[in-house]
Structures are given as structure tokens and as C-alpha cells.
Length: 84
Image 1: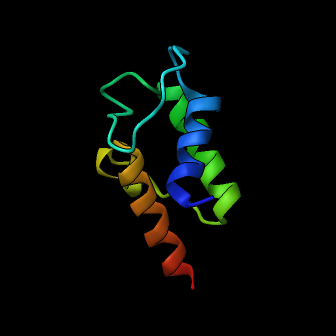
Image 2: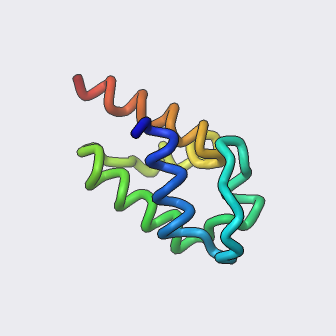
Image 3: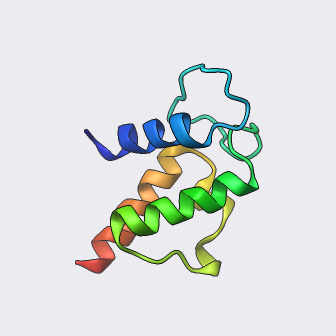
């Protein structure tokens, strides 16, 4: 499973605030679209840190990194490459 698919699956099964069951697309606005709430962001950060073995700093908690699945995947890729 590729990274974007893994992130979409985690978000749609564990974090979706409204639970309407519609598929999540890579460019859906997770924040302004109400797909995940503030508690969901905390769960997402915890998942990323545990799953990918990096820490998310306060400076990295930006809309640019967490707005869409594509943005999130780019952030994760950059963080994991920086670890190598």
C-alpha cells in the first residue's frame, strides 16, 4: 500500500469527524472541510510519530503540512527522508 492510500485509510477509518462514509480524496481540505477536528489532529500526530518514527515539532504544525492528504504525504516523505 502506498503512503497516500495508507494515510487516507487511517484518516477515513479513525479520524473522520462527521462519519458520513464518503470516500476521501487526496485533495480534500481536512481542516477547513471539517473532515477532522482538533482531537483528530492530535490522534493523527500520534499515529505519524509512532508509525513513521519521527517527532512533529510545534513549528511543523501548520496548515501547509496538514491541510490535505497530499500535503500530509509530502510532509511525511520529507520527514522520513531527513531521517535517512
